[in-house]
Length: 586
Image (tube, rainbow, N blue to C red; front, side, top):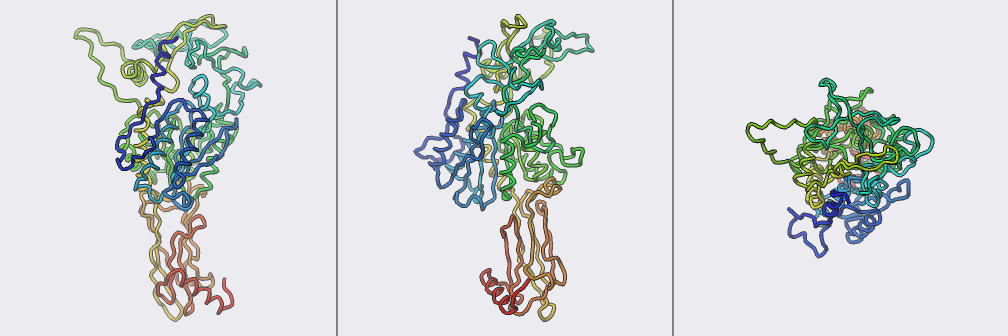
């Protein structure tokens, strides 16, 4: 057996989660959630159903969608009183979009457990929707089959455009349960010519040759596999097809193989889009996965060719950066290897829906102790071509017992005669040790509190009513956002897709002498205030109401009769009496 694989049970063992910073009062007879590494769909479903049943007053569970091969995508909804969940501001936590990033699902489950055990004061009045595994097909394959770094769902797809689909997948040639890489020195016609060299700093690492220094390529590197369809390519038509995190409309990478033939084709991305659109009270989201917008904040000056924000607009940058800074303060994370966000959920949410959404890789490579200096008079070793790759290798060797890298080992090959198989263990760099997941989830739960505290808060000032003459009144009020985030970010305002705040006065249009009866606010910046003035005619005893409406719901209302403030019930009765006297109204 490969020596690295012999160590995998220790790497993936189930270890009790950290409970640091958990208040003692929150302890119950029920054991705390313990993250595991190899959780299949059946185990996840059983856990979620048990969790929802045990916390019936604060948690509800439903199957929101199905994957292409009929695996459930669960939506777990948390609230202090779950019966009021839909009426409250809400935050979405999305995880499990990458098959090999098992830790994001476990972190989402640990986060939900922590919240329900001791509902934080910072989340009072907030609904938290948790999608622990948004892309179940590759996650199931990683949990129960050969492990490889892959995020495509179960849709059959012709990756190499030769007619058949899924006919030339990567293969585990050495039987170690992993799909890593294979390399061969010299020519291997008709397959790809050599294009890589071994890094002089560490021969395990591969890099492009430095032509300026006269280096010639000596190695060809492939994903582990064979050329099953005899087309001169190896392992290029893998099982499954669309990566949901490349299938959202914003900056959709249409020519990429896994992006789908049109946006929102994947069931996983389509239901998420529908979910967001159907919930106008969604005030923010956190995505645990391959993308990072909190350690490395996106450049707000960057725009698409059509003038849309690349991720966030310059006018929203300060508010967004403030929350990203809060993330770093809470988590202590200072390093994240985020992937390209083209076609991602986080890009679509920020730039097109206008909902502040923060993407976290959950962890980053830990800091390493300084490397020992060579003895005096000894030549310094060559510097690695990719310092980050070299640092990960040091982390694997010195802090994880070499678990992260499969040593290159000779392996017979049916077409190439002999190759060397090895490389990074799938998921090693993407996932923290399992015993660190609960602690990381606790820190992300604290960030949810920061996000909830910063959410937009729209208030309608009590109107000032001034008599200008018999039955003639000046009505003045203002609407303000006292939160630290905008109600809608600039991208959502430009698209006009987000629910607006509507300020309206109840007086019929033909009795408004000045001002608009209905005024639409597409977005309010943090700390912004808008003033409104009307001059209206109102008969003696007639109730006049000023209100702000959002998503068809009255969020705030003030009423007065003859210039004096009255309660809502009195205003309703006065309005009914006035209608009866006049025989109707507009």
